[in-house]
Image 1 (cartoon, rainbow, N blue to C red):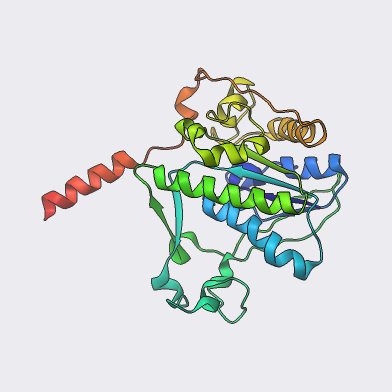
Image 2: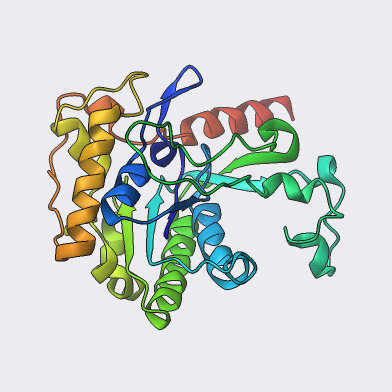
Length: 280
């Protein structure tokens, strides 16, 4: 079984509520000859992307009696953060562990974080996207917060990836980490050295997003990529798993450089802070 976790780039979002017919995890599962289980969801931050995979490996796999034979993780930008909207859910109680986990059915609001997944045989003829839209209401049940420096979130991401790698190594499960955005100067961090063998990109201080633009794949919504890009990613990951072949991405900004980096929300925050100061 292939366990795949990521955000909208992994599920194949193409804008306007549309998705590519066969996201790259589906193509990859087909090439590997295994079933697919995905915890991917549009809008996920790195913490949720990695924690969902860890949770499956440590908890869900025992109940489902299905242990992954391959794991892929697609990381997003370090600005993106998600937190529970406690005012809305009303079910998270400090010091009460069971109310903070997603495995107890009685906490219905918490279970909005539990994505509905299904097993399907990979197929070229049949639509095989293996996830359903979550019942999670982003503006109600969760809030998006911003990390001005990105430093703490980058540290948390590397720490979680190191934990995930350790779990996979103990269980002899091949792990591929696909970073859409670069790790930058974090490549000098000891945590980066731990996960380096599992990075698809050899020069992972740069990200895959730039490379996909240099390869001239179409973007239906000027942000997410088309089916051909997903097919290419599946081929690349297959080569990584089977032949341990990494890729080296272009380190220069492509002509469409304005779309290569995640939105920098800090300017909006600075304007907000200034307005609040003036109002005060």
